[in-house]
Length: 235
Image (cartoon, rainbow, N blue to C red; front, top):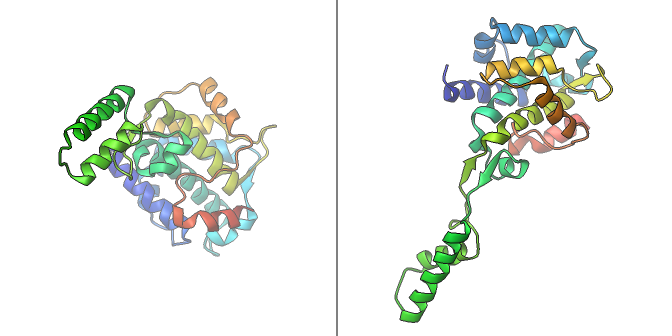
């Protein structure tokens, strides 16, 4: 399955989970349920000192068993990691601030060219459109020409940001007491990287995990409209 299609399935699952919808027969579970990486993830998590956060009990159906609730939370963590990795440009300014993408701004050469062009336009008193001139002025100051910026993919950051998303989601959904840092198991993270078909070393994962041991940021895969409710649910 291509990344675009996979991301759509994950977005759908995230929305249903975060808004307390019925999660039975989800396309994500149908797709991942029988895969080797998913089986390894669930095995790794259930064999550790990891449990569900009880204050999130209303996220699940009252008829769901504890085992089922744990499966649903695990799928939410995977789905969040996948959309951050596979659709990094979709998170706009939030993603850029977190380090997932880069805001596209004029380099020094473009800034200088914009300044020179503005100078010649003004010296000649040349009639140009106000919007065109405004864009030039912004670029001359090192800002993006449009007030709504464009973003470019930061390929080097995608691995780190996947680890970040898993760390933040797992803190909100699970109680982890498997080690001093209470981190999501490295072996489970390795299998998430298998799902997105990227090879990463344990050392790299652990280095990135350390950066988020005390991070209280909101996961990127939590929509803007649900940031407030997420905070309340995880307090």
